[in-house]
Image (cartoon, rainbow, N blue to C red):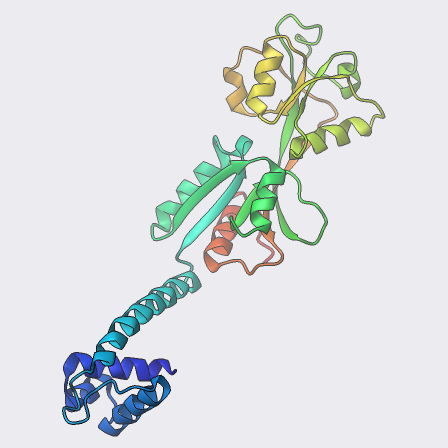
Length: 293
């Protein structure tokens, strides 16, 4: 069933006049007659009365309703895709909670100020959860701290965040200007939950010196780890961000530096929308880097 024939049929049904329908469509009257005959042959029933050639039959009335509904859905979908092609549409962002207090919200707000026609949605979670959402098509772009080399993702490095040690007041390391990982070994570590990018980063850092502290507790939230450290449950390695300055706990730099890389990941199995690519390009440029796509 040709889309053109359906449009010709609806126009004739609305105007109830072959000449007017032809003028509105910019085609000849025989073209409309041919389209109607094609539809009637395919459907197996007359859409217009033989004697009154512009008056709908019972089946024609039924087909008008179905055709209008189908064309409405099709036109809406076509318009949405065209907006996407022009870089206008919804951008579904997944982000680590560590990035949700300042970095990504500020970038998104800046982008929205010049791209008001775009709609942004946000999902926060652990790195593993965010990558799963990206794979399953529930998000368009994920801001994470680790991207597996599985071929499922296209990572774009953005920047690195320095990590520091959170300890309770009065702790033997509390007055130090800096600490090494070796300095932390005697003290119980409040670790990150499995599936978090931070757990991998912390474990890789300790593996580089061949030992790890005893694990005391674990949680996925940076603020929870820092809060537990402040309350005396152990030490914690956390991003050195201003948000933690509000907590009543010393935050000590680690030397040599341990860093958490931040990536913007796209799915390798799905074509990224123009809007998502535009936001990624904008983000990379705002962070002082040059996009490689």
